[in-house]
Image 1 (cartoon, rainbow, N blue to C red):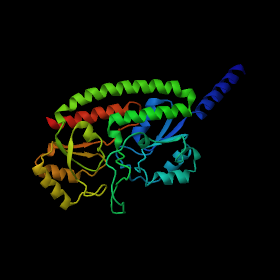
Image 2 (image 1 turned 180 degrees about the horizontal axis):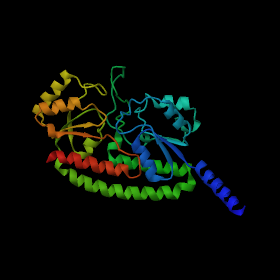
Image 3 (image 1 turned 90 degrees about the vertical axis):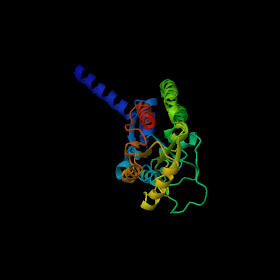
Image 4 (image 1 turned 90 degrees about the horizontal axis):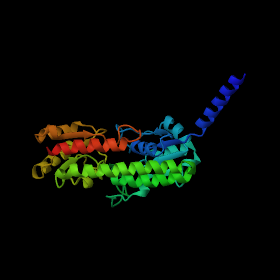
Length: 300
């Protein structure tokens, strides 16, 4: 009887511990990884992967269920998820993760954005953003700014976790700052060189790398490349020769392959993930390692 009682007590304590676990809904895998880096014990559900365009996600019932049960949500903001996140929030009916609530964290509110769209936005404008380019996770310095803001928010919401979160933030900051110094040394050979790209997926990466994007495969943001536009890009490449063509994995590679072949540089086409390929702790650092290694390879 005594053994049975202890077993039941242990099960009850385990169940209580599970019930108290913090459940997080992350719109993108980079923020899922960052949250896990700061607080590894959280249970995270991620809405997208590196093989998806985060602008265009279906508000599936499974995602509604995930955000309905979330204690905390972290998304990019800056209108990146405007086509689907509001629908998830409305249908889930979870008061914790509505805009303006402490448990709804938008990373874009904690960094300076570049290239805000100027002019009137119409249905024909494409994937443009009045507040600026939302793909700032491609700059490790801005990722660190988000990490600091996220740590402060988590520490405020969960004071019993504050010491752990701050320790993990200090470790992450120390590692990332050391890595940035190494990466920037690797990137010296790239500075001032030209590149052809697609969309603004790496818009923050280019200034950090010192690269100059001279042409975009898309005639308008989010619009698939057309034959006429690709001919224009090909003409530009003859007057401003790039070191390579770089596109994201979630883009159709056929237009870029045609262009690379027409330019006589098929080996200089680089197809890389536009975000982390997993959402585990440390994924952000591993992803930047991959980016820097692959992009610097173009200069050889």
